Image 1: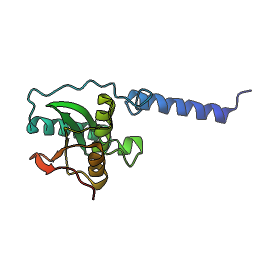
Image 2: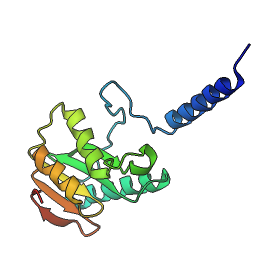
Image 3: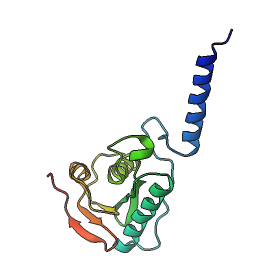
Image 4: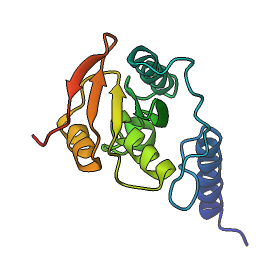
Length: 155
């Protein structure tokens, strides 16, 4: 005899997991490594990278999350990028900047992001600025006007 309540619960959980997987809400790989290929902009300047941060912001909005996006750049190439995932993952630390830093560290295989610049759609909050500091990021740039936020510091 099948326990109907357990069967319904399992069916619902399976449907939710399948939907979340289809929407790309689960991080893939054992270490959460991103499989998305980063398409580099035609130009390697502040304007191009801040434009990409705003593309990430648009992705966040399209997925039902908060309007933030960020990219990490080293030697004129994007090495990490992300939209905000706070709402879709239910993780208060999944700010776009934090997720872009995590993505860059995974892709580079190092927690040392020295020589990198963090571009974000808005100024970094204290948590994100501290993460950029601990990652060794050299410079932060934010907003449509690509304002130079200088080196990250601990608040």
